[in-house]
Every structure is written in C-alpha cells, then in structure tokens.
Length: 156
Image (cartoon, rainbow, N blue to C red; front, top):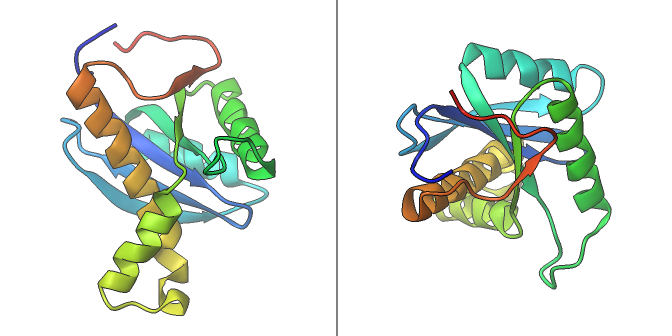
C-alpha cells in the first residue's frame, strides 16, 4: 500500500511506570500530547478507551532498542504491550524510538522545565516525538512507518 492514509493515529510510548499517549490530527500533520496512563491494571482498557474517544484507526507503539540496535528488556516489554493491543483488536505498528525520550527531555529542558517538573509530561512528549516521526515518514515515503503487529488490516 502506498500513499498517505488519512485518519487519527495514537502514539504510545510504553514505559515501566507510565505510558505516554499522543494523537495526530486527521490529516496527519501534527502530533499533540493526550495523556499519561499509569502502567498496570487497566492500562490496556484506558488505551482502548482513548482510541475510541479519538476515533483512531491505528496505534503507533514506540520500540525502544539500544543505540547499537540490540534489543533490551524494554524492547521485549514494548513488543508484548503492542501485541496485547493487537490481540484486543487494534491495528498496531511498532516504530524505532531510540531517541524519543531523550529528544523529549531535551525539548522540555529547552523550554525551561526542570527534569522533576517535567516527569508528569515527558512520556506524553516522547509519544508526540515518536508519532510525529511516523507521520513524517509516511508523508515523505507514502508508506506507513515501522512494522505491523498482529493480523494485517487494511485501512478503510
């Protein structure tokens, strides 16, 4: 499939304690922060509810690999979370997000926020960074960024 697919996407930055969520506009021009979801019981249900609230056709989950390209425990955790979302009926793509949290922390520092005052939103900003990257790749290449998880579902 080639060509940009219109529709809202959610960006998901999976951490061990929190999950940052961002969304795109329908035209795929801009990613904006939505919410930070506590990791644990109810996190999948909350992501599902947010996908419904925003009428998202796809969830873009960040895949944290080491700078060397090697997979880590966090990589396996993100893959497992992405698979759980796919198993729950969502269309999911995994994209390399090696530097999204670092970029988010740098942007927040650049705006004058301390690391402590940024803790509550850094996950959302990381989700914005990874979702914007996915949008930009698709706009530039005409192909979706990353790899599909679970059964392939065509976009309506």
